[in-house]
Structure formats: structure tokens, C-alpha cells
Image (cartoon, rainbow, N blue to C red; front, side):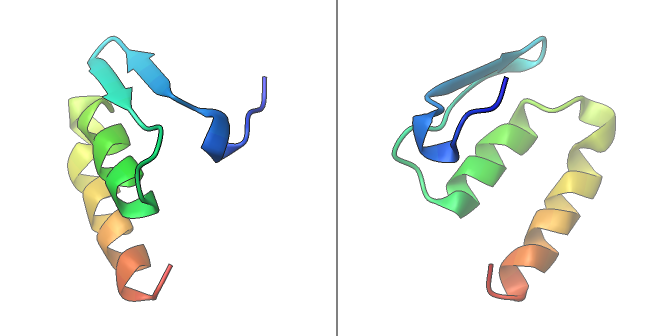
Length: 56
């Protein structure tokens, strides 16, 4: 299933839930990283930081 980012309200994984509706892209990324598998959070956080620094 595909949904536009503006339509997604809540994402649930085995590591938690992230409320996304109405959040900025940076905040959405932060919340999604917080519910990713712990083994990947640091790498995802670094990638998000690099993307933000490029102006996205």
C-alpha cells in the first residue's frame, strides 16, 4: 500500500508507535528513527543529519 506522507497519522512497529500527522519532515524522521530497530537507529540518525545539512 502506498500513502502520501500528509495522509499518514500513525506508524506502529514492534519497537513503538510514532504519531506523524502535522509534523515537519525533520520531526517525522526523528519519530520514525525512534521506532526503528535499535541496531539501525544510529545509522539512520546520521543519515537524517546529513540530509538536513544539505537543505532537505
